[in-house]
Structures are given as structure tokens and as C-alpha cells.
Length: 329
Ligand code: GYE
Image (cartoon, rainbow, N blue to C red):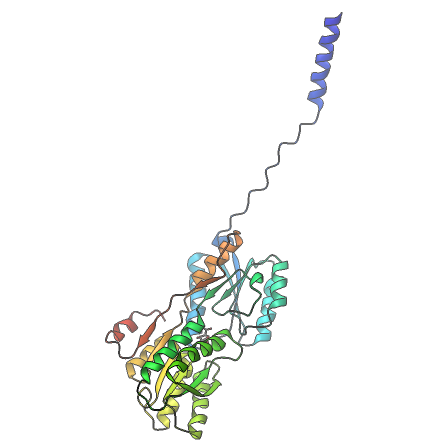
């Protein structure tokens, strides 16, 4: 009898167990998405199209996006800060955009949109130009050390004006409020003042040949007591060269000229003997921006600054022609 009851209990237990809903299998957290360039859409806010450097920079973004097979949404801010902020908000709201890159027109005014981008889970990469503060609101800055570019230009101007009785220098400045304009000016004074250079005129030429020429013409009407001109980019220096010629002065001889960017036009001016030195600022940084964007989407940690590699080039370099022939921009 006892055996029969025990047997029935065992059967009943087995039946009950079988009827119990299966314990849910330990749920694997969903596999973490590994982003590739093919499934990445990046919204890029360019400053505008203000010259040779910018054209090379824009081409770098469009060409390397194609080569890498990523989806690029390109926004031209037409050098208008309000348009650039509106474009930023557009990319935050755009469900297709995974990550945002921007070349900020000015160093301030970004806190709110950066916060909105963070709230929307969209990483932000600064390209070419930095902003003030807010480091916790963007992933990294890919670009040059503009202060160092200015220092290099100051050091070279000291060499060019060595032994010169007067060392009055005029400075053509980039768009007001932008990091290259602020930092190049700061770096230039840091080294130039060490050899007694005095910046006797400084004004924005908005990165353009036309304005660079107009500003220089106005100064030349006031005085011709100038021994050097520092153009914060090639285009403004080209404008100054034209103005000097029309004023009967010999550029790079009577007045030493240094520019920043090292675009093809600067090499031609050095080969023509109208420009003494150009400090390179590398525009071909898009691959580094895309690499950082992909790393950010994959949750990799990145340094706050990814510097670009740059040099200095001289009109009296015997290999200048070969160097110029090998340049990509
Ligand atoms: O030097 C100038 C351009 O942001 C570094 O912008 C860039 C600067 C460059 O307009 O030519």
C-alpha cells in the first residue's frame, strides 16, 4: 500500500513539474550594436565657402565619405552663425542623423544646442575650430593648434625682420570671434614681441582677398611705415600683396609677408616671390573626424583633442617647386 502511495506521489510531482511553465531562459542582453561606416549617418555643419582652405576641407569631407561608404548630410552655414545654429537644431531633430560634426563659426553660443544634442543621444565632434568651455558636451576636437600656428608666424617674422631698425607689423585677422582668429593673434604676439615687433594695425579681413586688400589699402593711405604683414590666412595675404603692388611697394621685399594655411595659392605666391613664408593648417582632416565619430558611436573613449599634423614652408627653399607639385591642396 505504502509503495503504491509513494509511487503515486512521485508521478504526481513529475506531472506537476511538467505542467509548470518553463523557467524563463536567462535572457541574454541584446547584442550590443557594433556601428560601421555603412550604417552611420553624420550631419556636418560647415562654416561656408570662404576660400581655398575651406574648399579643400569641404572636398575632404565629401570625398572621404564616399570612400568610406558613410552617409554624409552636409550643411553649408554660409558663414552665418544663426544659420549654423538652426542647422544644428535640424540635425538634432533629424531621426536619420546619428552623430553631428561642426566647424563652429564662433567660440561662444553653443551650450544650449550641445545640451540638446546630448539629451537626444547624438555625439558631437568639433572639426577644425574649437569652442570655449563645454568640454563635457562634445566628444573631441579634431584640428590644429592655432596658437602654435601664430607662434610659428611670429618666430618667422622675427627672422625676416632681423636687423631691421623698424619692426612695425600689420595684422589681417580672420572672422571676429572665431578660434583661429583669436588664437593665431595670441600666438603671433607671444613670439613676435620677443624680438621687438610692434603690431601697429590689426583688423578683420574676414578671410577674404577682397577685404584683405581693402583694409591694407586704407592703412597704406594713412602710412607706409610698415615692415611686415601677417595674414591670418593665405587669401587675406594675397589681398595685401595686391594693395602693396598698387602702392608702389614690392611685396616680400620692402614689406615681409607671412600667411597661414599653405594652400596651392600660397606656394604660387612664394614661387612668384611675393610671399616669404606660409604656416600650414591642414584642411584634410575629415577621415580623422569620421574615425572619431564611429568610435564615439561604439562607445570608445577618445582624447579631448586630436591634433592635425602641420609644417612651415619658405620661399627661399630650393626644393619649393617639387614640394608645391606634390601638394594635395
Ligand atoms: O585658416 C581659413 C578659413 O578654420 C582653420 O578658416 C580654418 C580657417 C582657415 O577660412 O582660411
